[in-house]
Amino acid sequence: MSQPNNPLHGLSLEKILTRLVEQYGWDGLYNEVRVNCFVNDPSIKSALKFLRKTQWARDKVEALYIQTFSHQPTP
Image (tube, rainbow, N blue to C red; front, top):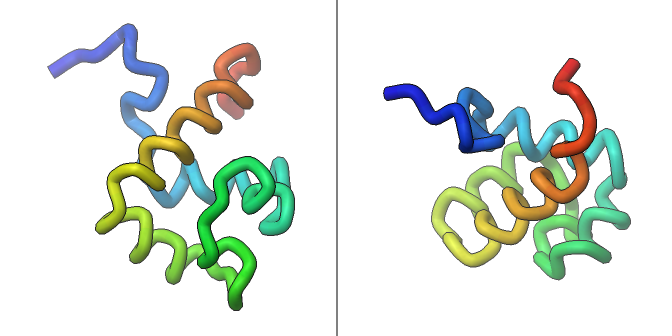
């Protein structure tokens, strides 16, 4: 199923999170999305576990990704 208007199409949650951490760092990411797993012993693995079971937080992270990278080409 093609989703040409979906800016997240083809991106895994892990890839989204990794790019945001590269852009903002864990502290900066926490400033944008107030989720404790971004400041209490942060890791991609623990953040993915939380985001996969917490829809509101995942929605905020995905929205931040779109806001941050929608004007830039994906590398």
